[in-house]
Length: 196
Image 1 (spheres, one colour):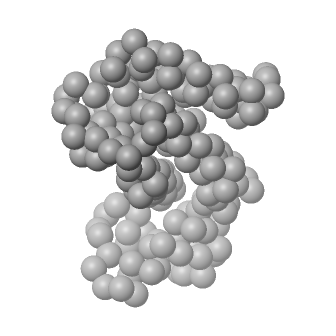
Image 2 (image 1 turned 30 degrees about the vertical axis):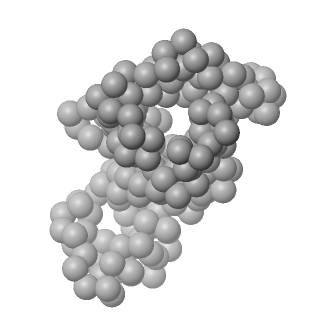
């Protein structure tokens, strides 16, 4: 973003732009979206959009970061690692949160965490899955009391496994969605069982 909104009115306008962008991405895909269309859908002047975002990519990046924040906040909200009956219930819940977002959050199914657009979409220095794994390790480490450094490796690998299997369900659509969701949970649990 060019600048962060400081007033409530500006913050609301940025949220309108992100919401409009998400709707348009759902309808037209990333390539079909333009800054003019985003501004029109949000009900703001295109110049107002350019106050905060230099281009379409920046708007979609902000949308992607918002989705990642929503994902980790939902994990933090829904999981109480100290009171889970089994640790693998936490794995299942994280995958369920991702699937729920994929099915319900506007724009998420088309851009997810930016990997469709660029493998380094969230952060120019690190690939998207590394950023996601770091955020997950931070949330899980804080909630479980386990050291983040030790979790990072396992979460990185678990994230790659789940992402690859869920791609078969949602992006490539080779197999039944629910079968692939269940398979992602089984494979990630199996991997982590040997690590934790």
